[in-house]
Length: 547
Figure 1 (cartoon, rainbow, N blue to C red):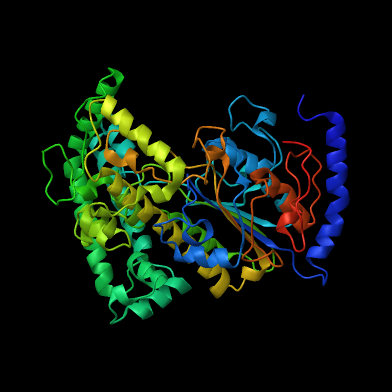
Figure 2 (figure 1 turned 45 degrees about the horizontal axis):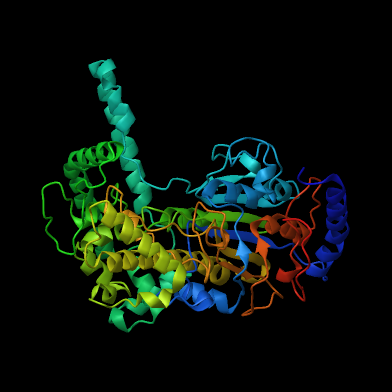
């Protein structure tokens, strides 16, 4: 039986007796309790340039963070897929201990946010949820929940389905209400909040400058930050309007193509005609959409802008006298890994509307050139995945087109580049605007190992799962091998060994007991993690007695 009773008693005694001593050591002068921010990227591999030596990735903000953080190559997720890993992080429990049958069924197990809320912490969750209870205020001790939607849904769809049962007056009244709601939503979107420090610096640097001459982080922000000038906002609004009109035109064709592909897949026909997106601007057939219509809806901003925007608004508005805990869980680079999803439909159109033109505005346009990618530099795990994808495509009668893998890699790295921007933008508010960097325990990690590239989706986007697994690891997401469980892990905390790295085994399960210890909060229920002194000033790894 897991865990054993006598192990449990020893474990709890160890934690409870160490909490007070460690809490006192964390703030010997009686200063404020620490804040906590847990940033997760979804399906992210070891794709950071400085921290993990990725041969082609460009991640200026995460590189900067890595230089001031403790970096781990031995950190494990709580599970091999999204839900169990996130539930394990929140509870400190191994998924085998969850009371419900579903792999995210944590029931009423106490969570880190429950514990901290009851000790006076402000708690917030922003972005992907994927936990058992509905994403709502009050669930798991969350006082604020924001940015939980991954995609903008078409407005009025459910309302239109019921119009046939209404009178003419009722239909007119509903239409008027829908128009008013639409105008209000647009008005709120146009009332842009104050720019973040990163975006303010980028606007200043971009004025009159050749963007190509800007240093990497400023070049990135100048492209991805919200439009600042009235003229830029006008062009962006026009691009949004054009994109939404194109969506309306293309929607029926896209649905028909997806339905046909799904039927073919159900019939076992893996040699079906696929929807392809070329490097050119003109689609080759009527049913082939333009490159920029790859996004399922007309996303108006780079991916996860809503998540970071909600977190930034909360940080700015919260009561400064209370400590906080925040989950900022990004959706990227989870599938669909799409360049259009990453930068947003309007920016895609404004940059020329083709894969080549959009990638040319990022650091990855050169990867489209013949033989530009040295695949041997990625090591054995990537080689095994690519070989499997090529073999499966060939056996299915639809070989991967020439240049397809290189474009897939470029789109994936551009998506990670946008993730890097979003994290840099968030930390610019935390550190530069609010001055809370030194008081905040910041973790950047992932929920599990990267997804494998796969050639049999409705579109080519499934081939874009090009995350790099840990060096020498086998397996990937969905497996309990090292490639599915080892995840990037950056920890910035005062006194932690900045710039140092370790391969010692740690886990998402260790976050709850470590956070509780730092906050001086007792944990009355058992956990399967342990307080990680490896992450604390002067700490050293200890022997594990449980998995």
